[in-house]
Every structure is written in structure tokens, then in C-alpha cells.
Image 1 (cartoon, helix red, strand yellow):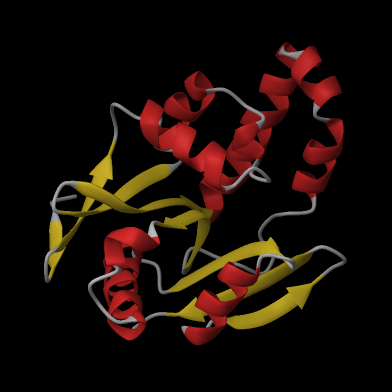
Image 2 (spheres, rainbow, N blue to C red; image 1 turned 120 degrees about the horizontal axis):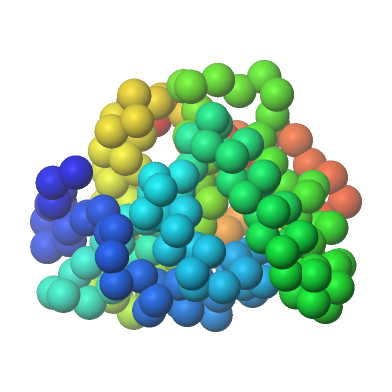
Length: 193
């Protein structure tokens, strides 16, 4: 994927030098299953094109991190996680609660190739300070559209914790629709044209 630009922001797909981005995901989304796994696992998922990693830059600074996975690859990812944990039982034992919670995350059986799973979205607010919230949302949605297009997908979906007020405000402000909830999670989707 070539670099896509919008105003002074640019989107690029990252396939190498992923350690910093992995550590930022762990730090900013501690509930992510990837905060339990290691960087080698994360890098191998990117190298094998199971996960796709993107960065939005502004003046060479990381403004946002986005990871996505197709429906087909989401199933592969779940098996890879299981095999990793079987090969690393100490990680499994010490993180069993987080792992069990992670099992409740996932795609709907009714979803097909039109859907793309947003695994992570981290927005570094300080790198959007010179523009309005509306403009920031437009930029991120512009890049979402290009990511979806690269997979021939039309609908983005994800889930987040009910107590994540920042995610709640962002997604509802950007017209994502709640399609399911459980005790801890909100499941949302949006058709992006």
C-alpha cells in the first residue's frame, strides 16, 4: 500500500520495525490479548499478513496506530494464539483471567468478507491538537475508508470495554452502530462509503 495523505497527515502500512508500535499498543490498551503475548508473536502475525498494521503520521510523529484483521484471518489468529499459549503454559497460567475475557471478543458468525475487524485504534491526541475534533474525526475516517478499500471491504467492526469512555465517545460520535453487548463489552460496526 502506498502512502496515503490527507492534509498534513499520512497513512502508511508497517511491516518491519514494529517493536515500538507493539509497546505502544501494550501500554495504551492493556486489555488487549497482545499485552499478554510477546513482540515476536505480534511481528510474526504481521510478517505472515494475518494482522495488518498501519500508522498515521503528522510531521514524522506517530498520531495514531491502527491494526486490522480480515474475517478469514481472525480465525487463523485465534488458533495461533491458542498454539502460542500451549507452547508457553506459564504465560497462560499467569494471565488466565485476561485470556478468558479475550475469548468473549470476536467476530459474528454472520459476518463475511465485506467486514473488516478493527483490532486496535490508538489516537495520540497531542498530535491532533492544532485541529478541531471534527477535522480529526474526518481524517481518521478518511484513512479507515482507504484501509477498507484495500481489502475490498465495506464495513468495519470492533468491540471495546463498556468502561472505555474515550472509545465510546469517538465511535458513537462517528456513527458506529451498536449491534451487541455483553457484561463487559460493546460490539459496534459502521458501513463506510
